[in-house]
Image 1: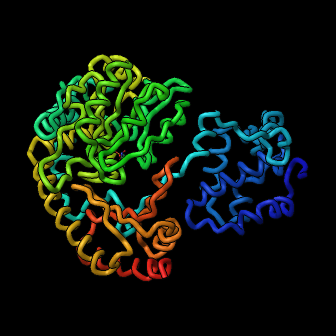
Image 2 (image 1 turned 30 degrees about the vertical axis):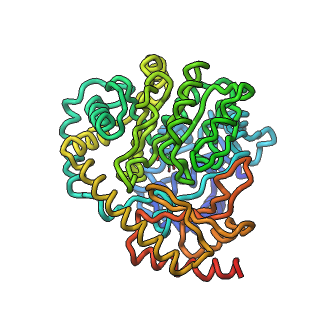
Length: 495
Ligand SMILES: Cc1ncc(COP(=O)(O)O)c(C=O)c1O
């Protein structure tokens, strides 16, 4: 350890590591400040010892005197050093006690910060796939090159001006956007709601997390589709819910299995318009059974209507909420798939009785979302741009799906068999039973393909082997490129 009052040869040694640092990224004064701070904290520069003068140190480090003076001032302002009238700068004597507590070399008592039991549960569930829009054939990818960017920029700029006049903060979201959503849902989705029931969230995922935390006690059962949307697992497990995986068939969620007395579930989370990922639509009979079950048991249904806008063979089907489900159904919608995955705007339509408690919770959770993107989207919708973009994308995605189906039939013969669905942004293609779809996808990912293995979406049910292939975000040329890369991988696995 260095003793007080540094002699030239001692301090030159002390600063050798600093001189050897490659610090071209940071201003020199910042690098020197951090270096000296560390030396003081780890005890190399000892309390009450005198530092070289600014002139001496400037010479040694080949820096200007002003730089050294600036560093000394910063060290002084943060309490590392003190100047003594007419006697130069000294390492602060105050530091000797407190420093011990943070010295790197004196940390036998250092314990890692403990995570809550809830967050440990998260580590036990299926991890989510990393999404990159650099990949081809990624499911849920909108056609970003078709988005009316200049119009959107106008809306963003208009929103910037509007913010000045936007009234107080609402936990539920900007009234203008909530009203636009009501207009859209009333006309396009047959949903009955008032603006007061609409809560804007950071994507539908946040809305669902909030709904689970408001409705589920530890140990409560939650009915989910199997296969289904894995993004919900985190929300269920962090509230201590018990997931009850319910099989599906081509009529959707198997109510005959789900709604037995032994299930006595508190909540059902379903994708009735188009099961994710299979694409099956829940039959009317099962919809009515579900609604009756919810009413009778005081249970709730979360209707995740993630991409029903893209139904190719007719107008979107009426939502479950619109089927007299206003009091039992929380309807969840998102703009991620229609506009942009990074827009992070979605919404819940709440049963009126739940509005006050959700509103209160939202205040504690995050105080509501930033106004700017909400006002921009409200403007975009009010100018009819949302509706026209949707109409255009519906046509485009339909054509892209046709192209993908044709190409898959042509190139893969019977190796990949399409599982019919009336719309969406991806297709499910079954592989021969027993094929290792995860191995295919792992290999496909290495050549820039973002498709997913169907078996990943299964929880308890015996999985079908297949590929979930996105088409909406890709031109015919890109689809060709993607399939050309996929072909040798499939051939290799099926030979
Ligand atoms: C079935 C389903 N539900 C919900 C979501 C979440 O959407 P958001 O991006 O709005 O959180 C997704 C996202 O891809 C999804 O696939």
